[in-house]
Length: 196
Image (cartoon, rainbow, N blue to C red; front, side, top):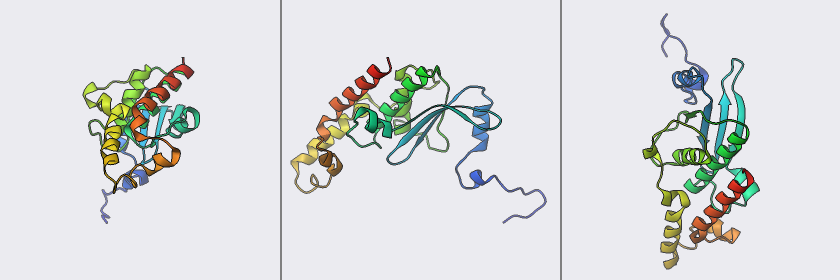
C-alpha cells in the first residue's frame, strides 16, 4: 500500500469496481437525461435518471420481472428476446412519463456487439426514444425474436440424452421453446396495445 505524500485513496465504489467516476462525470455534465441499463444473469433493469446535486432522480424504471407479471412472459428472463422486450416496455413507459430520450449509460459493463444490453437499446429505440447510437451494435432480428433458441430446441429434440435436461424450466411451465418467436410477437403486441 502506498503511503507517500501524494497518494490519495480512491473512492470506495471505484476501488470495488462498481463506478467509473470519470465516465459518470462526463455523462452528468452532458446535461442530458441518462438511460441506465444494468443486467444480471436473470434480470435487467432500465432506468431514466436526471442528475441532481443531492443525487439522481429516477423518472422511469422497468425490470424484466414486469414481463412475467403483466404480460405473461413464459421464456427465460435473462435472454436476448427478454432484454429487447424490457427495453421496449421501458421506452413506452418513459414516453408516457414525457421522457423522449437521453444518453445511454452502461456503467462498467463491457460493450460487445450484439449482446443483451444492445438488444435492450434496440427495444428503447423501437419504442420511440431518441438515444444516440450506431445501428451496427444491434443483435440480428433472428436473435431478437429468439429464432436461434427455437432452432437449438429443434436440434436437441432429435437426441434423447440432452433434451431431458435442457429447457427443463420451459417444460415445467408447459411452454415449448420452439414457440418462442410467436410468443415474442404476442408479448410485443400486448405491450404496444397497453401503451398506445
